[in-house]
Image (cartoon, rainbow, N blue to C red; front, side):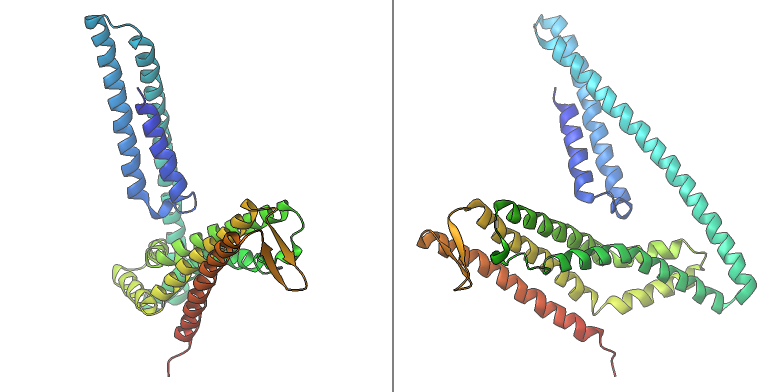
Length: 304
């Protein structure tokens, strides 16, 4: 009776993949996964009960203990997740009510100042844009911070590596960069949906909301696919960089940095060739990233 483990593994694997900061972007998918887990645990309970009944009929030994443990664990997980889902639903309901009250107060305040016309709708849309920019600030800041950590000093500068732990510390820096880049990538890829979430926090008319959404989507049409491609290349570059460091770590003691030649020398031709192949992959991904960054800068220039 491993249904309890299967459902728990599925839930943990999904939540770790989505990430705590991205759960709001996948509410329907999360509910679907939880529902599948409930079906698995319910099936486990039913099969456990059937196993106990079959034991009485067939007289099989050794079944009842496993069946009872399985039933208890399935009941426990089912109860905990149902209670957790109900509490989360109540909390989200309270948050939505609070947001609606805040939107109403904002609407009345701006209405008294700007009147109930086009200027009011423009200001509400501007507030939504500010909310979008605020949400983007953290992933952008983390990306810049961990990107700078790669070059100060360069994690691939082996002249500064004196012990194996130096390589392990660099692996951690690169992993932080990859995580930060993936978070920024998720944000950029979901930008239209996130902006719509911000619009829904303000009391715009449906027409004004649709117009703002359309304008925002149009503003991203040419540049956002390139930005997303650039961040995807950044992730690949980070992973290729990590492979260089893990290669050197795995072969610790089989290479040495020659200061007079400013290069690494390996014990054997094969190790040297494997290192060059690994490093070339990083160089190739870096070239792709830089080319995409140049394209993004070109697209960001004002059109005449």
